[in-house]
Amino acid sequence: LDWLRDEADLRLENIVAKAGVTVLIGTSGQAGCFSRDVVRSVLAHTERPVILPLSNPTEKAEAVPADIYSWTGGRALVATGSPFPDVLFEGESFRVGQCNNVFVFPGVGLGVLASGAREVLPRFFTAAATAVSACVTREEMARGALVPPVTTLADVSLKVAQAVGESAIASGVSRPCAFSSFQHQNDASRLKELIRKMRWEPDYLPLVAM
Image 1 (cartoon, rainbow, N blue to C red):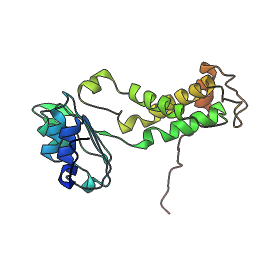
Image 2: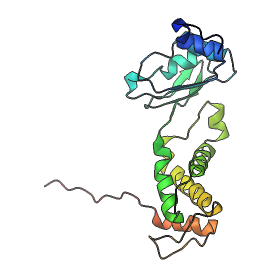
Image 3: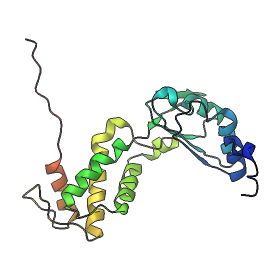
């Protein structure tokens, strides 16, 4: 990095400009550190900059989606760590996706249990990420969405579980499931049925005031 010569060069705006950054991932907890100049510097390197202010809670977000869309002319692909409302920019509505591990960990656990995987492999998480991304429709992508709506979590979790289970089978680490008499037998369709049978749904009894 021949441009990194002194402490002043460590400014985020300078790093983005010199390194040709196209993706910003914020986990700093420093509200506002993705300034207009920083975001526009990213935009100079790509038509569709990916800006992810992931810090929680909301007041710690590195930038707010409304500003990001304004600074990039609606071209940014945005997901946040905290929930934000949809953004209306120049007559177009953008759904702000919440980038949260809740999309992954229920399905990963269910897929591992259903497949009887004797170990958890890194490729399981690649399979899970691919399954999550496949849940975003082309129409949603066109509106800048990077992750599916939280309201679809139950369906996303099933697809993640299936992808993880199939990855375990393909990797040769699957075993009979210890939690069901019905077995996947290393078959994708049977695995899908097993996952459906094992799935837990919170169904609470009605509360009656005494």
